[in-house]
Length: 385
Image: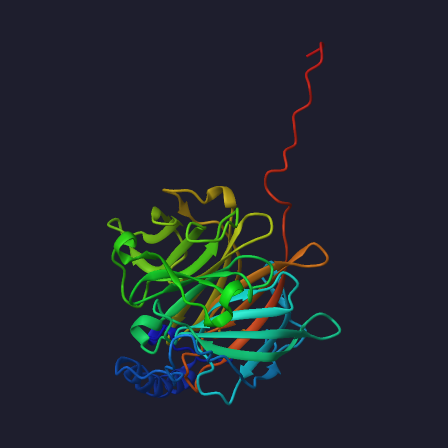
């Protein structure tokens, strides 16, 4: 997504008069970036070859380690989570960036992402001897295709935001992608056709109701069981679409059947992604931005039992970060079970193709309660009772 609230920068130290002056000058540059966005400036697109011709290409990605707290290398506490390494990613490929949806394999070996300029990214994840993020390898990009099998080349049709993929390997599952502007969800069968897959249409704005062009379905995740196909059950959260009562829209989707619920988050935070945890709960990634405070990021855990039609999802706040931490416009979220019973949480930022922003990939560790549904039965009454 593009917009003033999604153009971030990293701010060190507290806000004082000198910082304020610097911020205002800096915002002139941000304003110019915003004008480019309004004028329709987008990242370079792949050539629209004939439908069916593979446009997947290898790309070079450079990775530099980043600290959670730039001022203190030993500070790895992130609320109830623990920071386990992060990378700033750059590439000479001009189409690299804008990553808004993320999936990671159950063994942590591979990631798949989608950009809001209609590109796929796949790469192997490299870890160091302590299990921290160390780099990416074997990286490839490919354009998302439309219903006719042709590469999507317009921003209005290609503003992909949410990504959920079935199975253990995201490069071989069924990918559900949510789009803004022309609000809809499409399914791509990566197992059958790889990143050259032609999508099928799951649901459109006709069944979702009106939403702001740039604040539609930002977050999407599968619900159990993972059946795949066009009737896979999904949860989808809008960034800022509101119902008649002013509540933020969310949806439970099963094919053409759409049920409604809402999310109750702390303003000014808005949802940017959601992932299903191993115990059946859901993790929501949230972000905020203001010119003075800079970027903000939150993670919130919602019990799986709360996810039902008509519910107002609120959950429990696990962490909140601000400009003192190495964050940017955090949009992508993925989770997997670790080897020691913990949950590994991956987040990725959308740099809006701006030189003032960063593409960050970070990993955190979260200790999670046992899965729901394990019953402790009451003891049988005795004669004395």
